[in-house]
Length: 508
Image (cartoon, rainbow, N blue to C red; front, side, top):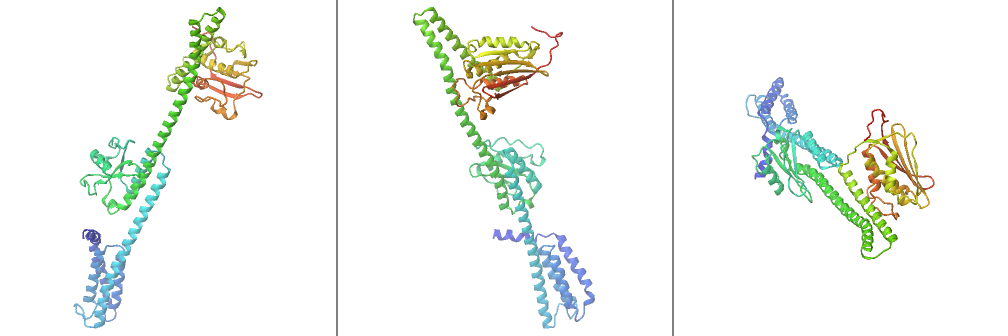
């Protein structure tokens, strides 16, 4: 019974002004039809009144049309059907015609009004379908939780001229802080306890609902198949919200599915990152363990021999030399790890000062004296080479890593060419060797962290060239690598450096 009552209420909800208008229209029609008040004309009047009622039925509700039909029938009887000015009808055919007129007028008005209401419902459903289509299209193109929320808010505002606000979970099935919206005056009274209730119970609440109807706003749960993204709060007119439960469920389901898609995408990405990080950690741990174990084993073995076994002066010198080389290798590995950590944290500070390129080359070649014994090093520095403004310590590590890399890959009888030049306010440093070079597909990855050519037999962590690029870029320079025509590879460093003013330059 309650459900039937709700269905019948809209039939008689027309405004009083509509009743007054139909009375006025019927009165004017009757006045215009007054000249037809004779024995033959009253039939025409009935058709005119039926036509007027049909026209009004397309504009007014069922209540005003019933009133117009009743007044038309009674006035037609009183003024136009003989005997005049009475409700008495003498002729049987006039009685039948009056009854038919009354029934036809009522049916015509009711059916026309029903068609109009059906047309309005169809139009509303078309608008709802169009709104859902546009929302689905926009959500399918949105990427990221923030973008999906923005699209949903804008779409809600466009179609319903109402503000909305999302409170989403933090990924652990707990709602984040609601943070009252700053630029929306209609959504200032959001209740956190009501948001929590809606999220936990997955039930709508607030205005126009059965739960907490006294609230100023409407709270709707965003529910998904695997997780509930959160809650949407909105303020909307009663006429736009009521009797559209199916539409609102579908509308918010579209938003929920889009948000759930983004949440699950982020979870999958985090899982992939964690998996890759775990693999990288294990690989790096094994690599570092292996690289550190070799020099440490060398140091321990040589030290043990020196301490426990009598040895000749020659063997003693060789063992001490092995300890020194292993210590240098160990120190180089540690320095590379520290430099990489400083580069990634952005804590590299470049202290530019005027430097002599020859001093830089001599310092590095002295440190690599043993490595450069067999591959012959050819140094080319023009006599007119000016002073260069750079960080001596950082560039020392750059050149050290490049030369060490060339020594590891160069044949014993080959040569390494180191050339420095200055052109158009740019310091250019080139290191070329006669090693195997790099596979074509590996060239773009040469400066990546931990990258090593697959068939490489040399040790190392794969950090040297990555550090070279980082330190050169810290000087606002560039470094490139290319394979030479016959064999080998060439690294070219280009660092901007102004021409020194020898009168005002300060060398410490």
